[in-house]
Length: 379
Image 1 (spheres, helix red, strand yellow):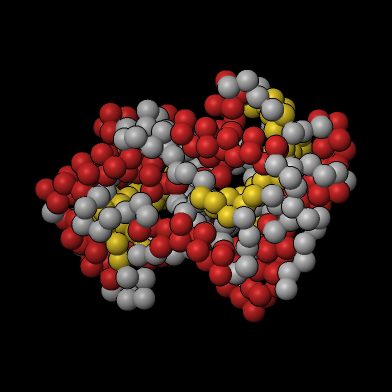
Image 2: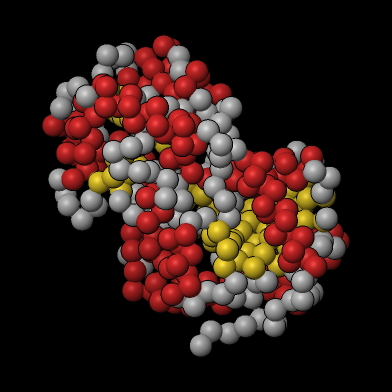
């Protein structure tokens, strides 16, 4: 098949969406398929056999750490040149609007996938009153697709309630060779702990943004001097966080990648995930594969990955004290190890091959099916 992926985020960006896409592209290329990617132009021209077509990208005033590509007729040009069997629009919002529009106009079979709870994010940027408009827009985009994918059953149910159609869960996966306890090193641990290797190392990995609620972790450091914290990643909220955590045992690393990132995961003791806005949280699985117990908010998507007191701990996001008290339970080394061992077992069979096989089969199914009605409107 000839597969065209139109995405709001791609390399060199590092997030769960990019991880999922690159893993599937690698597998699909080996499986004999021709892939092209349309994404914001960040300098990448090729990835593992896939040509990357860049669309001019710009930063939003309120989110300057990430560049987005706006709707552009270049999408139509590239679509016509490539003549794909199927188009996959990932998180259709900005450049994805062009992906949806032109795929429909050109009558190309289309898959769309939902990865980011944008309406919920809007509240953190004082745009919460417009969430109804974002839901209307997103439903319009997704209901134009022949098939819509999301990454958890909880999200699928929410989207069904919002009127999204033709929904299916796209399996979760993790690279269990890249993320593994044997990647731990004394050097990395010393770096992340600021030289205090005997401390219990709390690890956060991800984008530094307001909606991630990273500030919650500071109370733990104030409560017990047995803990220290490493924050791995970057984003628009970094300066505020560095000020907020000043005077605590916290190390900010910025972005790290590949073997270094795997080593950082494996060198920690506890992975902390305060966010309540995630649709999956791929980093949770990367932490589990690295042998870390996870502390996460009790929400639908996280409960599909973290079983409370079995492979991690869940806290009540509505209780201000719950996050701190939950983490303090992990001062017990034996309890940490018990959770970590189960976490490893629970992700052992969740490699990317099954995820990629599923998307290949879905692409084929959509490419061969009768298309849905042209550009649908909402009720």
